[in-house]
Image (tube, rainbow, N blue to C red):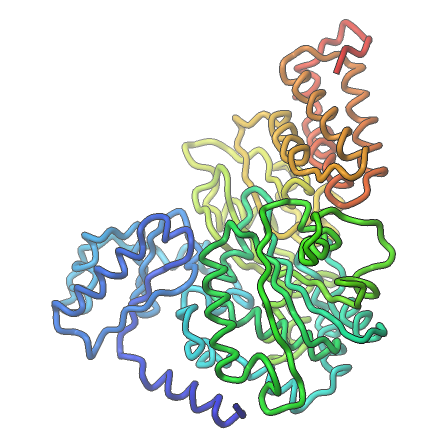
Length: 536
């Protein structure tokens, strides 16, 4: 495979397209609402009306407005929502005779117009199971350029100059991490894509892998060239069967065209990618636990240093980034580091993908520039809270994050601003809560999650999360005293500072943030007449 052949495939794919495209979402959300049957009925309607030469029905990835699925889009300007198999003939009739009887969605609403697509630029637009569709959108051209026009250190410098920070939650500078692995000494090196997305309410990585798997493969391959690795692994939750299937298809297709494997693009560079399925342990999102799982060991973390960049998988230097981080790489190479750096805020560059969930009208997937305010996301793009209620708070960062009150919704969403509010960016889940939500219940829910997901290796996390959960239960039941509330705060501080890994260290965050902004709800539940600490 060379550049000429790649461009020929792209041209053939574009030339083969029929005048009218009817795209049907076949990502997990719409599949659960029977979108595959809708797609089949659309194809049957095209055949019945004799429009095979004019109309092409294709399955595509996530169209983002998940609450209105199944979604069908005709050309660029027409969206149909909650499509049933009975609607299929009416949709095709619009194309055939101009009749408009099927329910239409509004593409001019802020949910769509305020998005900026980098990671999701192909989602909902291409068939995720056809490599030719990805190549037709300039796919793998960045990889060709890297292998034939750039030295590894130039790739690292470009990523560093772009200002891209890891999208897995911590926000560590991606270029700095790549540079560390590139400089590390070792007989071999590895690249790992962390797709072990486990936060409640989060589905960003899953949607990217279901919608545009080749984008992640291309990003991983560029990273491998930059740091000197020849083997990659995608560690993905086994609960994501659609994403796994499409990754397997994508890997086979890329290998067949010489875009993975030996002598990629007729260069001396070799790179292979394998999948490893996780059993759903939340702690395996922590990189040392993830590597232990890949090695066939129990998925428990170990102290750092040494860091994976120096001694990771099987003791060799290892680069670990998450799905969204790798999905940003090819666009940065194609369009330039300065282009990417011009988007976002001073310290948080580019865009961020969020999964909107909870008490909000428009649940689904959005991608916005860093610095977009929570108010824009919740009230404008999300459409606000339904049923006449008002938003009370949002939870960002999942169990590791915190609850941000509505009074702080004008805060720009970036790494530093969220940290100042007592939360974190996390991988990108945003859960909206309305005025009926009890914030002690929220803290208790996330503590129960962390308690169940603790690997048990260190006592502060194994025992501390249990005791915190019991204290929160005691408070919620109205059986606690002020002394119990003081004990809750002391225990949170101990768990945060004494736990081995990020799971335990961040487990108290929802408690800290709800105490900070909603202490009155705790005080309303405790008995202020006693000061003795009861049994926990």
